[in-house]
Length: 375
Image 1 (tube, rainbow, N blue to C red):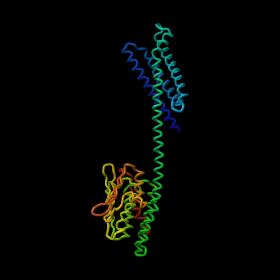
Image 2: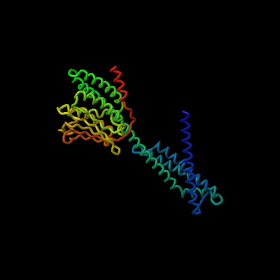
Image 3: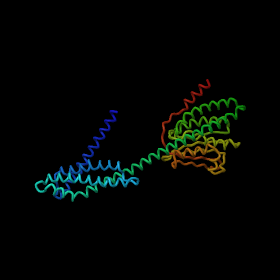
Image 4: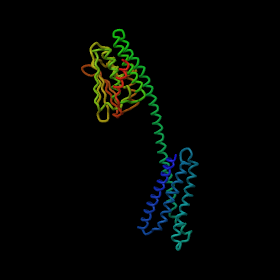
C-alpha cells in the first residue's frame, strides 16, 4: 500500500509540475505578444490569469461536466447549470483580472473603471473559453465511452470464442479416441503383438493429448511429435502399404498451431486413401514459412476428391472441427483449401499467422515412459 501511495503522490506532483510549466509558458507568450505591441501589463497579471484558466476554470469545468453532462437524457437540466456556471466563473475571472490591472494602474484608473474595462474586453473570451473546455471534455467523454464499449465488446467476444474453442476441443477428444481404438481393434486377432504395441502407443497419445488439450496453441514441433506416434499406429495397422513422411524444417517447429489440428487431416488422408484402396499410399506433411505465414500441406497419392468442401464438412466431425477452430482463432488471417492433385491424390493446404512459441520436444520423455511400460 505504501508503494501505491508513493506512486499516486508522484503522479500528482507530475501533474502539478506540468500545469505549472503550462501556466508559465502561456503567460510568457501572452506577455511577449503584448510587449511587442507595447501594451504589456505586469507579468504577474499574465501569471494570475493563466493560473486561473489552468488551475481553476479547467478543473471546475471538468468536474461539472462529469456531474452534469449535456446528453440526450438530461440536457434540459444540465444546460441551465452550465450557463449559470459559465457566467459565474467568467465574473470571478474578470474580477480577478480587473483587481490585478487596477493595482498596476491605480494612479490612472478607479477600481470601477478598471472593472468596466476588463468586463468589456474579456467577458466574451472567458465565456468562450468555458464552453470550449466543456466541449472538449464532452468530445473526450464520447471517445472514452466508445473505447470502453469496444474493449467490453472485445472481452465478450474473446470469452465467447474461448467457450466455442473449448467445446470444439471437447468434441474432438472422443472422436479421436474412438477412431484410434478402432484402428487398434482391427488387428487384435490377426496380430496380437502389433495390437499390444498399438495400445501402448495409444496410451502415450492419450497422455500427450490430455496435456495439450489444456492449451489452445502448441508449437508445431510438439504437434509433429504427437503425429509421429499416431502415424506409427496407422503404419502398424496397414504395414508396407502406408508410409507417412514428415518434411518439417527446423525454423517451423517453434511456430504456433492449434493443438491437435493436423491429426484429423492425416486421419482423413489415410481413411480415404489406403483405407479404401488396395494400392500403397504415401501421406506427406510439409511445412514452410512465407513472410509472416506458416504454410502446411498434407496430401496423399491415392484418394480422389469427388465433392464440394461444404458437403465434405457436413459428413463428419474432423474437417468441420478443424475449419471452425481456424476461423475462431485467426479469422480472415487463415486460409484453408482442399483440392485434387495430379495425377492422383488429394491435398489440404492451410496457412496461419507465424508466431513463435517455446518448444520442448516430448520424444525423450515419451520414449522413457514407453520403456518403463515394457520393463
